[in-house]
Image (cartoon, rainbow, N blue to C red; front, side):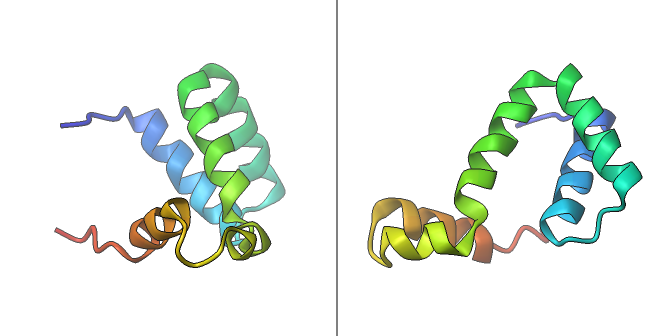
Length: 80
């Protein structure tokens, strides 16, 4: 079981808003400041950002292990 702090939860919320292009300038600044104090989360976010760009995913091809894994993460139902 992974236990995240309130700060980490907030980081992921801000990051999701950034990816959806819904984050304000203040929220982006807050995200950057939080990532300075949470380097492990910052590293995870960097890796996600590398593959978020649809151009990157399309260059991988539909059947590569990474593309399949990312598709699974994107479509996974985490509502339970």
